[in-house]
Image (cartoon, rainbow, N blue to C red):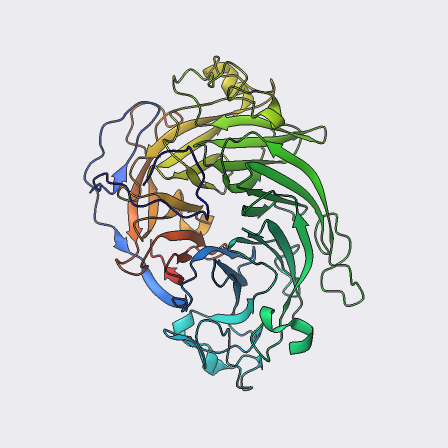
Amino acid sequence: MATTATASPAEDGVPPPSSRPSSSSSSSSYGDSAAAPPAAPLPPEALEPLALLSPPSPSGSPAWHVDFSSDGRYLAACFGSPDPRVRVWARRREGDRWTAGGGGKEGKDGAKGGGDDVAADDGGEGRGKATDDEHDDSNDGWIPLATIRGEHARTIRCVAFAPASNPSDSSGVPFMATASFDGKVVVWEHRPDDDLGEDDCGQDRAPLGEPCPFEPIAQLEGHESEVKCCAWNATGSLLATCGRDKSVWLWECFLPGTVGGGGEGGDDDDDDGGEFECLAVLQGHRGDVKSIAFGPSHGQWGEGEEVLYSASYDDTLKVWAEECGDWYCAATLGTCDDGSGAPKGGAGSADEDGGGADGGGGGSATGASHASTVWSLALAPSGVRLFSGSDDGSLGIWKMHTAAERRRRFPRASAASSTDGLWRRAGTVPDAHDGYAALSADCAPSRAGHGRVATSGGDDRVRVWREEWPPSSEGSDADAAPTFALEAVSPEGAHAGDVNCVRWHPADGTRLVSCGDDGTVRAWRYRR
């Protein structure tokens, strides 16, 4: 993969594969200093293919991103040009009957009765309640619900469900956001009880003759060019967006059924789908901002309960925190090259410009930097460990330290505030995808087992890594560098191109879904 960061790719395409030789090792660990190579690992198990949810598109559109609703009931995937669209599936539960837009059975050659452009059988039979015949094992219980077109004119790069206000309430109304290269972010509401015909929904947002269960309720504009990612906070009260203009935008959201929204979602008497207000525009990255995610602050960053993480084409990650209603850059990860804790540009400044949220300043994060674009980031369920996937092929592993630990153990490390904690590089999987970019990472839910993370990359594979315990490094457990072994990998040829995204099911530690440049969306079973 190309490792220069002098210019941003025009359409977010991944550079061609690196000429570096492939690594034959499936387990590696490096701490703050180089560690001895690990013992030869056992061969990884193969991930078991469960379903081809979306076959290769006749148009050649890549599948860029997948996301589950927080309760695991819905799955969405977004696709790029020349046919930008979002496909949504609903999950059938044992004993339940889910309403789907046609509920057609999808096989290897696309949805029943048509190709990839048809989300369900439009022959009239099977609309409404899904029948038992439509729930065979080929789709792993996922029912095609909708294909959404028309609101975005260019590649849809990201789709993200807002968290359910009450995951135990099956009547909750999910919202989702889509981010596009057309510079827009659209927020959608699921309205399963609406009896919308073709004239109401529009042919561009649903298959011909089928009802469209998702309606756009807001269009957020402000980015100067392509929007690359969007992410909700834990309560659905904040939405973050980022893009090629090097900025991160924070939007305050007032959605029905969420914190601050007032009232329950799905109220037929409420025509207002929600309100959105821009809280902040965060500047500081020197290249495209590729990925963002919220996480808990654990009382170590600002006054807020959450912080925001961003990953960029400038080879760094940033931590943004809130203090007295203002957001600031609390730390920059990946800028230190001397291990002292002092970021480039001097103490208290993460780069030459300095200056907090508008200048990219902030506290420090020790450890070597990524050598190229940071494509993805993932937080462990605890929120105290962060993973970063890079174009240099490595998977960075970062650990959060409290402010007290920073002062006691790392006295030379600077901080934007005396009460701020410290992110420090704990280890690295240096060649996570055999010399190709690590494009996506996602931490497993707790029921999948301690310390498991899934990655996908430019080698056309999905990989599952398991943390080995106790660590192999000498010293106390608190200081030991984590060791991750390759535990499972997707079969060769399952994806015929870069795998752009992988996600764990939020409630089932045995299920994953991936999507890639070949336009496919695939479901997998992981057996630990």
